Image (cartoon, rainbow, N blue to C red; front, top):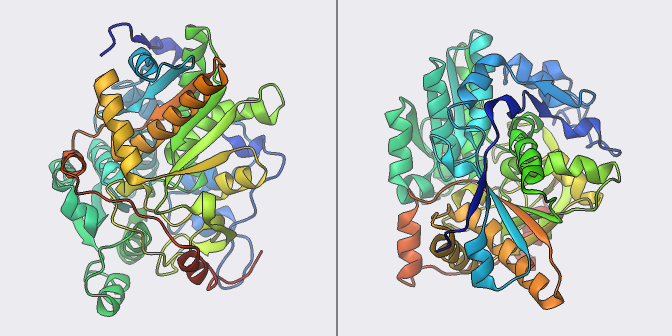
Length: 455
């Protein structure tokens, strides 16, 4: 393990005081989100029954480049921000690469992941509006853990629908949520109409993020003084996460370098957008030509093999129609251990950036991701979350390409969370009990051909 690792930490005075709204700079704005009944674009007020008003306004904001972070949120950020930027000398040496590899270490937050950046903001805005109860979904449990922490900080009651396979695979994430005071329900459940319908049709269904979203929305709409909160996909969530990249910009300057490549794992887009958007604004303006790579699982390849179409964000069809790269809202993903990446679609902003060739995507096999995660643990000392290991695998691939080409490249990736509560997954890998999952073209076509052709 390297002893030369350099860590770059911003002084408190340099921590960003505003989030970056990339839509204001995009030459081609994302297509509008539509009312599924009328097929007309939504206005901000159409979101008000579901989200806190300030969050709905942020969702629709296409003009303000920077949006101020409330003082109450900034104070809570100070518990763990700035997060370190680290030069991965040990990994570089193991790969014998000329590439300079840096990672932004979001695993140092109190809940072990980047998800707290948006959880604190969403809980604050709900509390500000006078909301007493909130609901959400969670895949691997990272978002649920973060929102449980944030709900407790602002005195809110929280109900979390956790994808059933993760509820069973990751009991300690469930315990974390319960420790902070949240109610955790395995999804699909018998507590909602959406859950009962799915269980009636598929009694052994192990769940999906789309199903959990349906249940959380249904409960929010039926509970007085309650709002729904979301951990990824939508614009306001990506906005809150940009504090990652805004910090990283300043830290890369401290290191005297600028990334040629920025990489993050991809499920719904929260951590990818967080690290990428602040750097992307310089590519949009023509100042820089950085590459941006989203690393998704081969078992859920919406960016690499999905179709661009309007689709629901949930399985039951409760959400508006979102213009996205999608595998279909009723897509049933394989039960991989990177539970946070098992989402059927990409957000509207990410999808437009992909259409405009401003970002790239690669798919990573499950076994390759764990192999990369173990190499990272052995060279840098941090056991990464299975989700983050997809970004590490993509980083290793790019570093080895640099070696083949004999070029010095600077690579930055986002370590979105640690894997200390994912050791069951590592145990399965080390015992040769994990397998790769890959979708056939026929399955993808059968799933996406059902979508209404609105584009």
